[in-house]
Amino acid sequence: MKYFAFVLAAICLSLSAAGGYAADTPGGIATEVTETVVTVMAVNRKARTVTVQGQDGQAVTLQVPAEAQNLDQVHPGSQFLVRYLESVAVAISPVGGAPSADTAATVQLAPKGAAPGGVIAQVLEIQARVDSIDYKKRTMVLKGPEGNRVKLAVDPGVKRLNEVKVGDMVVVAYTEALAAEMIKR
Image (cartoon, rainbow, N blue to C red; front, side, top):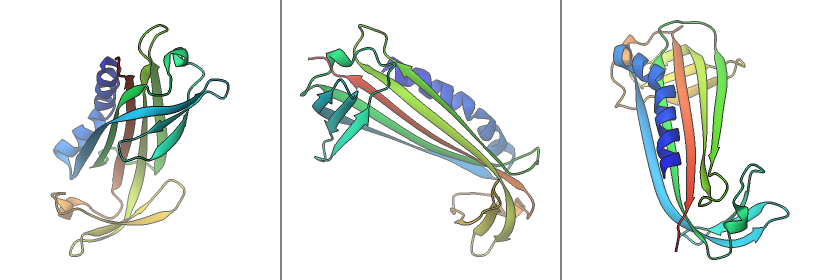
């Protein structure tokens, strides 16, 4: 749980730049956190895989990183509390520039001897140019760093769309984080 809070704080700090844009320019942030309990169905220590089953009955096999030191504590029947965070921040870039993309990731695992668990987080930030915009239909076409064009519908919750102009740079930060902690019995 403390790992999740630590990484969540780091993610919020990494998104503060996008949040700063949103205060002075059109944009917004949407975040969703999901929590569930999964049960370990099988452990393959040699292949470093664990098969877990969610509350919906669906089984998933996960690769355990070599850095994870507590796989010996995980057995069929073990349960993990899992939290998944997904966040998207969108803002007009005040600095302009060229379309670009960047990714940052972090992994925080429980120390040897502690309850198995950890956090994996990834942030993808894309800067794209507004190629066209239809204010009445609330759609825009963005041109990405590889020259690809994507047509997007703009949510009615996005205020001040009328201030966005062709040629503006839009910054999109997409964050995913997964935290898992073994439930002690």
